[in-house]
Length: 318
Image 1 (cartoon, one colour):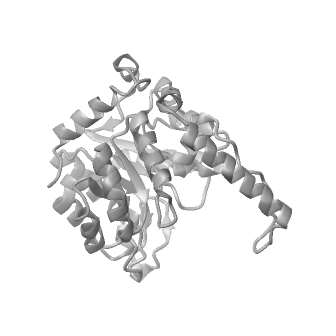
Image 2: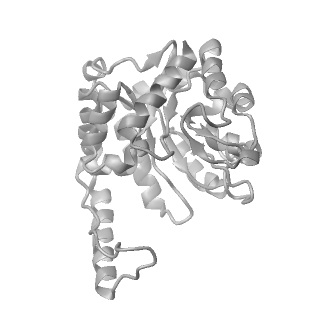
């Protein structure tokens, strides 16, 4: 069973009833992220090289003209004032930390955990407001959950998502985690888009259509966050996946990768094997309400390259 887009809209409106979350007046400030009917945005991971402080990401997206964001949880926490880890023991590859440095890191990690458990809806409402004041819609929260994530930290991620009022959580995770995540998704009535990679050799990694379907079986709230670049790198066709499963896709990650035959590299848009234009035209012609978010991963300065990515997508939709 899958939700209709109308039901998703109702869930989004319901999230606005959480104390301290985005008001309808403030929502009216958000700019329209659609281009020729398709929502174009960015995963804030794309700006990882400039993300300290995270306010620089907001400034960059505003300058580029990206009005929809998939917000990394670390960037949200940065904006909310979470204590940072100390910059110790990072001098070089393979460098071992001293016992004193290890103790310092452990103390800082404990402080971060304590901080996370002290957050409230008001914490995230203040974060959301920073984006909305810039005209940017935080539509998704990327909160990665793996086999080492404790249950209280899974709960924390869902509480953050609800307070931010996002459409869904996206997460890089494993097939086996779907059954652990499902009860939280069902309890909070929050969609979770599981993110695929290209690790087809590992049966526990989400990569193929079959592994996505295994995750879908865990809950009607488990959907796909389809990375069309990674999916191409598995020698699969993202257009076929979208046509078949568009009712269970939260959003797309857009990147250009070579397929297995050609080396699987991340490349500037238009230089790989990913049919970005075909995917975007499919969203346009079929009127699928599936945001297409740039995830910048090839070499270069995001402030220089991201505008090129956005223009490529607009040209593809012309």
